[in-house]
Length: 102
Image 1 (tube, one colour):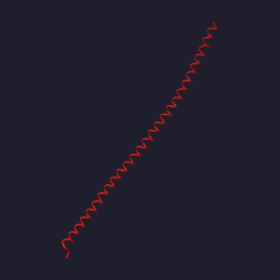
Image 2 (spheres, helix red, strand yellow; image 1 turned 180 degrees about the vertical axis):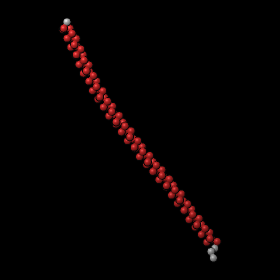
Image 3 (cartoon, one colour; image 1 turned 90 degrees about the vertical axis):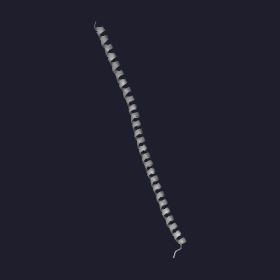
Image 4 (cartoon, one colour; image 1 turned 60 degrees about the vertical axis):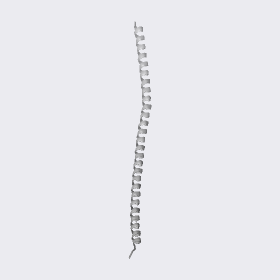
């Protein structure tokens, strides 16, 4: 028949088993939480990278548009200057013709 000391050791062994199981479960849950946080941070970094890429794309498009607009404006300015010169020459030529016919 087991003595009282043997029963105490058996109870302590079961308590140690349950304590070990509880600690393992707590550590397991803590690691799962850390993994979830890591996944969320990774996802956030990926989204931030996509947002940065989109902003850089918009920036480059605006810069190209500004360069293109500058080119268009200078071309239109030259065209207007040319038209103004032609109009001035025609008017001067027409004025000269009027004075010569009188």
